[in-house]
Image (cartoon, rainbow, N blue to C red; front, top):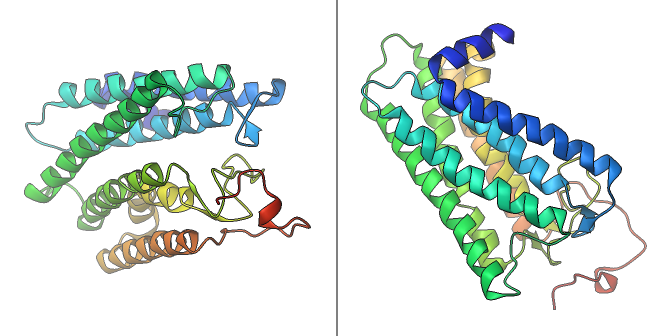
Length: 268
């Protein structure tokens, strides 16, 4: 791991440091979930900034690694786009968590409504720029890379982009839940609902194809056909979880004595 970190730093020190900073704050946010009791949507308020900071850490490091392969690519422009836009999201989510207020779906005032739209814009711009990076991986040849690894990177970016835009589905519903309004559970750190459908499951799986597929292809599969099959199976899993969520069914159901009609966040 140390060797990987040192090589990553030599490839892209800017994104390496940004990712490391996000990881540092993710650890702090996770510790705050253990020593504070402020809640937003039935869970500790600090879980949300933790998840965003940790996810940004993995995203920044993955893209720092992949972009190194691209010839004649303006990496500093991409670096600072990620840092400014994703840094803004994490900062705003953190400030709102500290106040025990929701950051997403919050349109209770003109300012909060504007900030919610600004976060959506930031995520969109990062996704579009990353889609462009994916296009470059299709445009160029990379004879120095194993074919299965190259296709895993391509598939990982494509799936990431598709399921990143799934966020608009949640935004249009003003809820990540189907059946209740923004229901959460104590499902480890993820907080996915165990009562109703949760659109964040497919969002999570799809976006992290960016890391999963290349790692599995490079270290385990080492085969073109197996890598393609793994990509198809991975996408199928993400799509099935999306369909399941849209049907109002949780990924992991929890038996409850209370009916949905008794839930304080029930959709009317």
